[in-house]
Length: 508
View: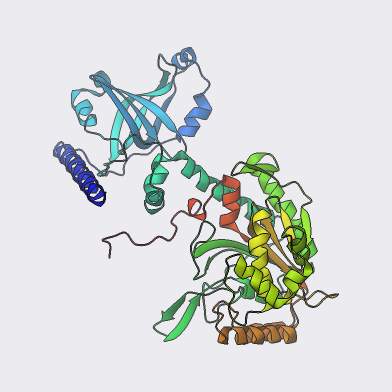
């Protein structure tokens, strides 16, 4: 079987080489006719969707009585030649349209040159609209110019790449041939634009914070390390912008946000990519209850913007984003949804045994709160299909959150879960420098004990808190997971243009 696969791969490579040689020969023939292969002198006057908007409903008779001429550009996606005439479809970033090319209109020389054009070539077309006998809106080409010669063929009989990894690795090809992929990233752009507009209209100000940091902070995560040669110092790619944005609260800004790239040196899965996008915002003089309402308003409004409804479909499940959403405390969720009795998660040895029985490892010396979090991940999270706010997380796993006034063993923190995964994490901010320093010290001890994800000590952040940070709440929302939800994508790699992949075999 292995030999058959090797032979098949070799045959495919030989076939591809023949096609590449044929295309190069065509290019040489065009150049010999003084036809530029990569000119930059053509200017289109409209996108294809503009043509469809203006004339898409006009009948053949209307187009004949009211001629409409256009200059458009796009990539050839299909060719059908019938001797002296050729039909083709071209595609720009907005849509496709058919073109009709005639030898008698272009002339013998230009038409013969056009016959050397290939699927994948980018062309400029000038002409008037008409409808064919099958009523398809078509541009009758009075002139057609080669703008970019494609030296490599698109896959044949294309309805989308079959090889999923190839789609991610060669995203440029995926975007050319797969309308659904283009739509995902257009929707992503709309989502980010909506979030910015939503926050800006409510008085939030967007800032930029460092992506290379001396001390990685704002999340319990393993960072990526790098080195600055001129200063001869170790730096970390940020795991979160949180501590810098909260410094801005100290500085007097009351509503701040950043749509940021974060880097966490963790595993890759359908929900995790080491480089990902987050929205983080911080708001003075509110608490985590206010952020629950704010989050409901923002995401339900986003659904109405994208779908004109607060009901969306994700992986064949109807998810209702109509507020209010279900709210459960962390421990109540372990009982009500996870099916545990208090003794199951309150007794350390019993909780650890249960985690191991469920197939998860327990690190020696691991705090009970972390074991409880693993129980939550295993038993509760996958069942949270409809929107759920889970709140009052244990203090030991919430190093930056404000303790609850009535029960200091838990914090005023919530996480939002939809479709069985975390979408957002938020809390009333800890602004007591003494408490924060103690929490950092506890994290340092955990790091020294072998927890690579424990938080670093940040003395400058403590100093900032000593100047006084107003009472506030903050939230992080995973943009990639949000886009997954709103585009019905099963994997995070579907919604990241260039996800991290292993190097191709044979590359450097």
